[in-house]
Structures are given as C-alpha cells and as structure tokens.
Image (cartoon, rainbow, N blue to C red; front, side, top):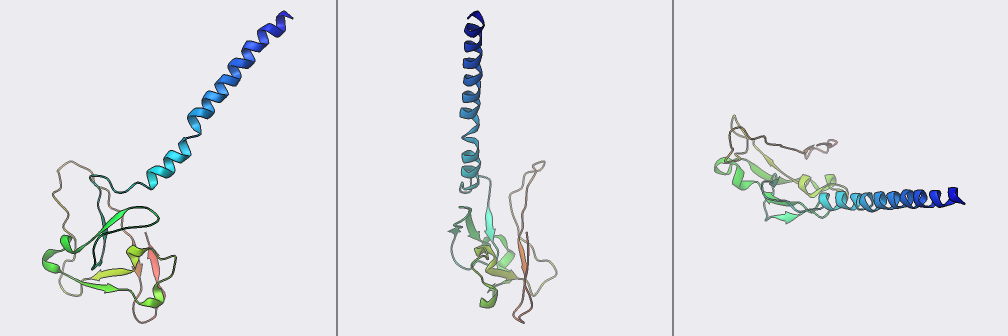
Length: 140
C-alpha cells in the first residue's frame, strides 16, 4: 500500500512532464510554416528581373517582388517575356520575364546604400532558354 502511494505522485509528475513537453513542442511546426509565409520585412528586397509592370505578391511564398528598373543604370538592358512554350504551371512567376544586356561591357544592378562591415545575402534564380526552342534549365 505504501509503495502504491509513492508511485502515484511519480506517475503524475511523469505525465505532467510529457504534457508540458507536448504543449511546448506542438506549436513549433506551425511557427515554422507561418515564418516562411511572412511577407517581406524591413531590410529585405525581392527583385523580379525584367518585370515591366508593377510590384506583385507571389502566391506561394507571399513575398513581394518589385520591378528591377530602379536598380539598373540609365535604363540599361531590355525586358523580355520568355516564349510561351517555356511557361508551365510549375514555373515561378519571377522566371517568366527577363532583362537582357545586349550592349555594354558591364551589366549589373546598383543596390544601395551599403554599409561597410555589414553582411549581405544575395540569392539569385536563373533560367536558360531562348526563342530557338532549345531546352530550358533552371538554377537557383
């Protein structure tokens, strides 16, 4: 009888510990999914290379993309929509148009102002394809 009285508090403590752990861990996956779907925050910019229109929010990621015209020098380059035979339901919107730089020795964006000593993360996505019906390749 004495042994039974001692085991009840231990079982209660063990059950309470598991419930507390479950309470703390269960919301974690929801937080991860929610963080991925957050719109851009201060300090982040998502540029759609070759976008001739206005800004848009990408459906899957909820990221807000802006046209690249403000980041090229003196309107350098030309905007092009990719040929229709490359567009599939799986192709992200940011890959449906491009900016080409047929002239000039240097073709780049100007992002600024940059702060000396800060670290910057740049992620790019590229799609190779042309109007000669060659196979397309996507690299991110």
